[in-house]
View 1 (cartoon, rainbow, N blue to C red):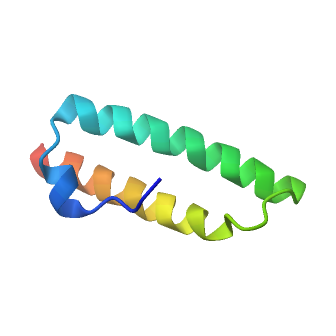
View 2: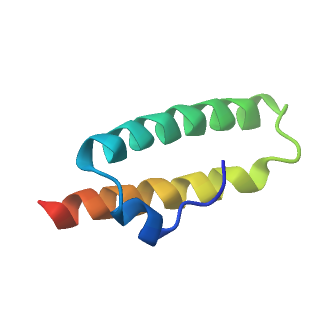
Length: 65
């Protein structure tokens, strides 16, 4: 999954942001479990990018409240 930019996220509706957040959290769980097992090789950088994308989405959701 490519890095999500704030400009792109701001164009999405609240429901779409919630869906994206759910997808990213699921992917993060998969990557973390693979990292713990030791089967994660080239994708170690994805964990950081996904965590930051999750933070961006949560920030946007909180700004809109």
